[in-house]
Length: 422
Image (cartoon, rainbow, N blue to C red; front, side):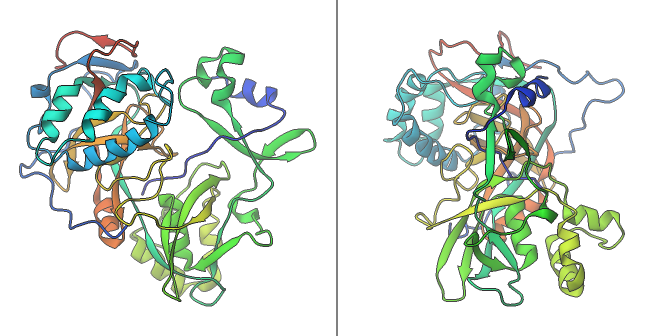
């Protein structure tokens, strides 16, 4: 399970103490088994193995260095990149990319954006090889791929069993402090890079943490609707979802904000207490139904709480908006750590899925609390609905990463070494 909640920036007060303390869609088409060659698990550093990298480095590479490059399907990545280009065209060419330690300016990407609009099916490889150069990614933290999806759940506008858990809009007393906005003022490297935020509420002239899940009481008019407690919690874990109401209408519960607490799996807490043998979503739902008097206490094991906003489903072929504000593309978008990769970065991952090779080109358009753990940690958006959910639940394994930078790239990047990685 992946913690999907991301923290969004907005204004706050009384920042000095905080800053000093921190200065350190319809369901997709059936998804076939990726790849045909089996691959053993890739272990992390151990006895006799090289130590984990401590620096973020991009090393020059060739497309022929990338395993599975020639065989991979690039159509989803091209679709995701075109959506990214729609955002680039609405910004000035000299604007920097959001987050990351490389990527240059928006203008560096516009020639590729202009070409992408005219690329026909079958020419995706030619496009990416013509307009980009690859670089091998090394750095600290986790080297792992997981996957997430957009649940589609049954909901009701009014409370009626089994629809007993509310989906809440953002509370009016919530404040968010954008730490990244203060990086220059405080000349603090810990605040540079990705827009990192803190969430809280005002208490006099200070900001204090927002209440934990067990202390959140809905305001009048804050409730979007009701759903089964397991479904609401699943939406909060995944970050967003589609609601199918009893009258046949549909809406999207789009991520809006989070109370700031670190995610602690309610399923894992039940397993650790011996009350849930296997922490799957189906078993979790069954346990809640069997123990109605313990539903609230089970959910309250996770202090983190996600608030939503209701939106129309404008494009059933696309997913919800990610942290970059762009509708996600099934199997074409990936959540990354924006302290290293900018939103819009094009990355190729070489990992495993269900014992088979998983090699895919993706566009960085989202992040999450469990994803901010290094440049080789990613979470792939699988799509919407139960089939995508079943697919996402199986993905959890190590991976190697490459990133693509526009040709004639003149902006400084973290560290671009000559030669080919081992």
